[in-house]
Length: 121
Image 1 (cartoon, helix red, strand yellow):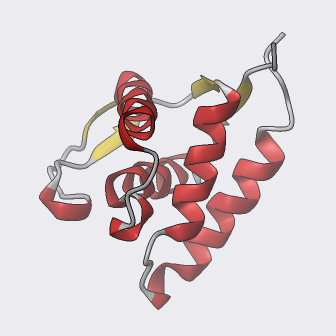
Image 2 (tube, helix red, strand yellow):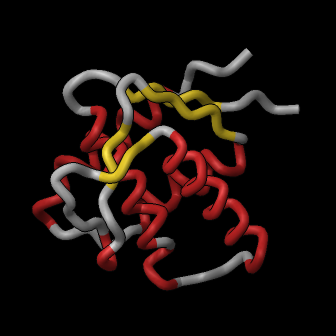
């Protein structure tokens, strides 16, 4: 069985990286839904895990599609199954980000690729 991929949210960029990942899941493959119920289950698992390491933002603000924003509880970590990690990476790369988000998306993707190289034992 493949090892889980571990993501550690810490430091000054933790909340922005968390926000980018959360929004990527909310946006979901840019409306190009494929994979049926299994993909929906993975998305639900990812949202549950992200919710588990976060709290509602204070002061309140919104994420994509008027979802209440959340702030990661630092330090926070996720141990993702390989299929969930792959979907998260895919969603981050596919989302129709606006140009002003480019730096944050690239930072989150680079961090995701590097941080997840540590595997949960």
